Amino acid sequence: MVEIKVKRAVAATPEQIRSVLLAHADLGRFFNAHFTLLAPQEPGEISGGKGTIREIKMQGTTFKEQIIAADNSHISYRIIGSKPVAQHRGDIYLNTINEEPSLTEVNYHISCIAPFWLPDFILAFFIKKDISQALKKIARYFQERVV
Image 1 (cartoon, rainbow, N blue to C red):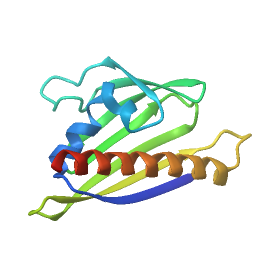
Image 2 (image 1 turned 90 degrees about the vertical axis):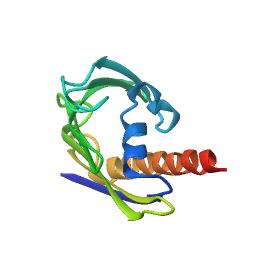
Image 3 (image 1 turned 120 degrees about the vertical axis):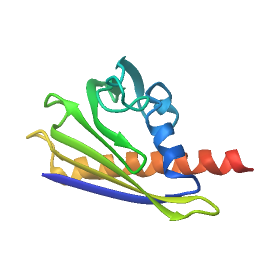
Image 4 (image 1 turned 180 degrees about the vertical axis):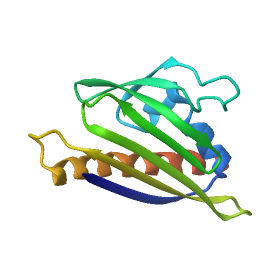
């Protein structure tokens, strides 16, 4: 089992970060992938939240993810099926560090099983690199909005 954990402080509220992360069609500005919304959230859920299904195209592969829970402190999602990785689960925790000015610690956790032909440490390296770059872009996005 591959376990990846990335942490970053972002100058925004948990609600602001949650809104950006659940704006599925716009996630390509942060992640090195193209996102397409396939199904909206379940009735009564926050926009882009529980039940949402999105298609991701990246590095020559296409797969679907489903949001399984979302609120202002936690977003959880999974890959539908077993490709490109099996038993994938992503959890993003949003914890307030300071109220004024708003500062949130984003803890991004991913667990999955690599395909038999790909060593765990190589998969972990590339996923961690991608998540770290995305969180850096998200932090920059909020910094630029303040300036």
